[in-house]
Image 1 (tube, rainbow, N blue to C red):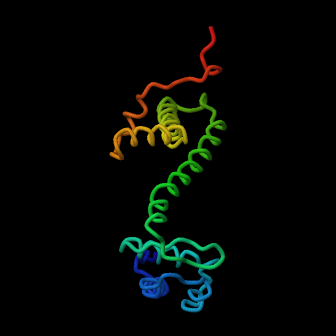
Image 2 (spheres, helix red, strand yellow; image 1 turned 135 degrees about the horizontal axis):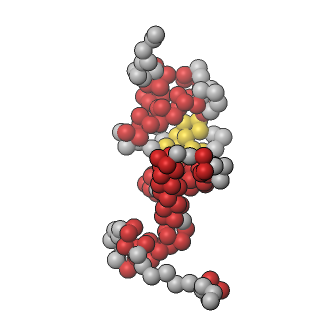
Image 3 (cartoon, one colour; image 1 turned 90 degrees about the vertical axis):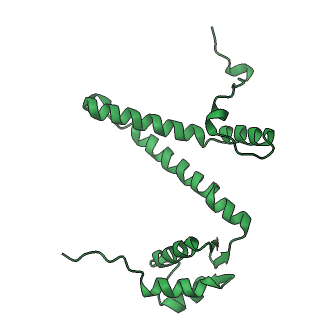
Length: 169
């Protein structure tokens, strides 16, 4: 059996060297450099190069259909917050859609406990990444003059219900 190699490929290293001092690069340039279709079947080469550059503090944003452009500070902020939140939202939604297909009665007590814990964690994640929670966080951060606040302090804030959301007798 052949052991996996974790060495960086020559094509990835070529892309890292090429992109390190560039402000922008087209997919055509990168494809010519490596001989690989970096915007197609071999996009993993570009993904690996971008990850290596990010470890050095060099970030690129995608210019759809064209190539990469050096990310501004605002784009780096978006890449480090909004993008992961959106990915988490999609993953959580897909997981919750799968949950309805689980026959809880057929689970062992141990599996049922693990399922209930996992379901609760997903529900907590969904609540904490909601737009409503982010709005509450924004208001609380503004009250603290831009200082950081803990999510637990925001979630413990009293919730105001709309008139038609009030519980019925």
